[in-house]
Image 1 (spheres, rainbow, N blue to C red):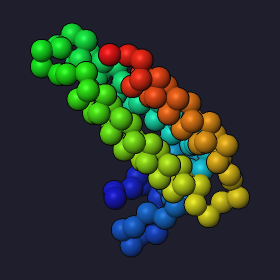
Image 2 (image 1 turned 180 degrees about the horizontal axis):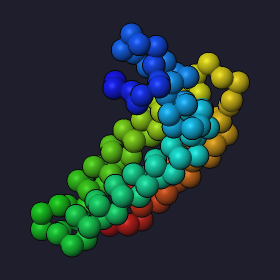
Image 3 (image 1 turned 45 degrees about the vertical axis):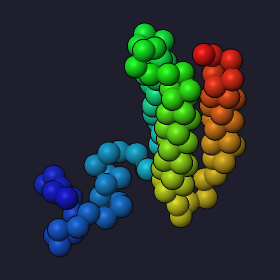
Length: 118
């Protein structure tokens, strides 16, 4: 990774402290931004698949749209958990409550859509 002038130990690698100095915040404080990014990706997936099976019903059946939405939602949830846990690795921060509330909320929304929207 190429670093700006004044950062790095000269050996070519960036340490965590160098990255923190460049971005101005510690990485474990990004849990809120990671959560908002996950919610944005989740709702983009939901509305993207909704467009597929509402506006193009001859091309995308309702069942395949629900399946795609559920599978993509699971992949996004796993990525969200991974990002939060990696960002907080080695710190005393614990955002299990935020992660649980976010995942339960998106799961309830996904189940509602899968069961009642067709």
